[in-house]
Length: 70
Image (cartoon, rainbow, N blue to C red; front, side, top):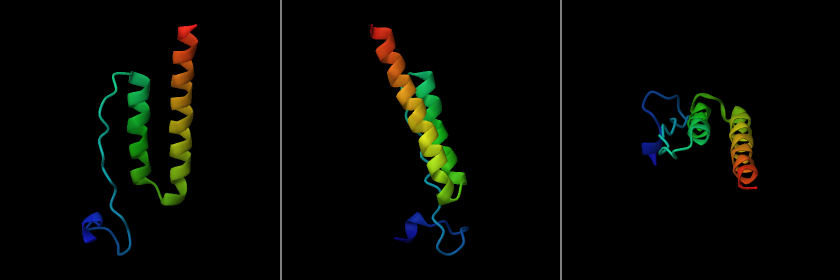
């Protein structure tokens, strides 16, 4: 599975995924999805901070939807 490794990366390093999320039409959610890309530039141990930040933001966005329904 060498296609997941960059030719420029050190042996054993996995190249960033470089995925571009599709826009959702919700600016706050789109910003959070782009934030996930920050993990590409961080060591694996620091990914949790990005994931927790995005998870928190998505929960807040969902809560705001519920608050607007009532």
